Length: 610
Image (cartoon, rainbow, N blue to C red):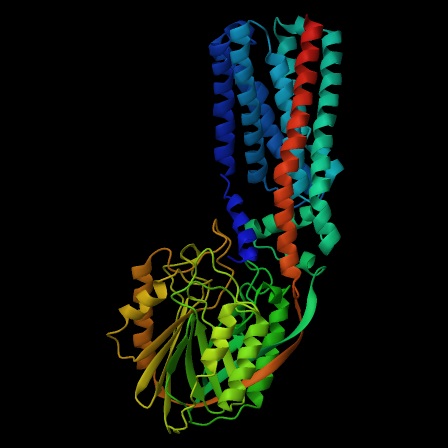
């Protein structure tokens, strides 16, 4: 599995949060129940010693304060020009924090009942300290308001809870519990406990963020907050972070143009640029964006490239467009084309067809699993096929149609590379010059499916090419790879149609990778429905057949700003090391801090009360 997509899998932690009304309703009900449960468990040490009154007290202390803090937190972040914290997020954060405190209170009530000791104040203080640390960590990590401002806003909920508790106690017969010495003791111990916990959080983040800043010059919390913003709002501000680590490269784009009586009927493009990293960031939606820049039917296949060749911004796709349009101005057309023919060597399988002075090679390792073909390998395939077949252009396509979680990239030195070179050497150029070539096209957005089924914005594009009575269907899904075995299932399902050959491809779009799966290949769900779309598209493409002329082209794309060779690997390896180290550092620091805070609050308060 590609390491970039492994990190994309972290998106499973970005969930759709409940709305404001649901969070407020939850706060009201759960705060009331907390008071009731505490009274039932430990009636002797409850505030009012009455179930209903205790429920109301729970609502006043925990519920009202949490609702207020939900509003105030969001307002504070907005005033400080922070990001991500909408009112529903802030209210859910308050609900979650209140549940932490409620849980600790109930545990404290159980211990109070078992050992006949009043731990209500201790438990509440301990819960407030934990919530303060949690709120600070969340705000600091996601809102871009900085550490100091996060520590201030993080205080709002704990302070409101303690303030409302003091108010209720002074209005009740238990006001004597809050004498001046106890109040001073509570304040001192709470402040010191908060400092201990905050220091642990600051130390953890500083240690975890250091490698990313040192290796790539980008901030871990900036990366995290902008990633969340992209997941929530579709913002592309994350691209500005990638600019700090970007690198300009030169690569190539190859294409086949089919011209009918009214001009270009169909354009088949294979750019050696990777459609990543995920969502709508960089080149992730390149297949759709690039195709939309042309006025005719356009298929953008997956050329040989890895995540190193991810454009850092959507605007970089314009450079691919310009290169293709420059090439189209110089293209030469003729009616020469060959039949589609397959070749195999060990794991490598290719489909080959000649057009005018060029050729196309559709490469797949199906039925075995595979991932991206590295650019250097693709360039070698291109050079080898041009030399062996005496053509001007070689359009290399990574069909990207057989996914397994263990699939790895095809890199120099892999056995698959030699299989590809060997099978290219077996290609025999058909010198027969057919005087007629027909092309039919069909585009279907697959409206009943979306990225949950692995289908991107462009849906399905099919082109049927007829040469000497042989019909070949080029079927392209706007998807990130294909579940292993599904390619063969599609091929078996269309055997009865009026075609002789078919190849199924995916664009490798990463717009579908914003779900719980880092990878989201087509074919995991709704296979029968997807196959019906394929059958329909092939039939419509056959009905659209008309005579055309064909030409091929190759153009260099200069100064394309991408992640850069090895930078994506550096990014992923750094993030992976941060995750690995955090699994050790976080528990050590936070558990140590929790233990110290626990002893500090509970033991110190017991001494004074005693």
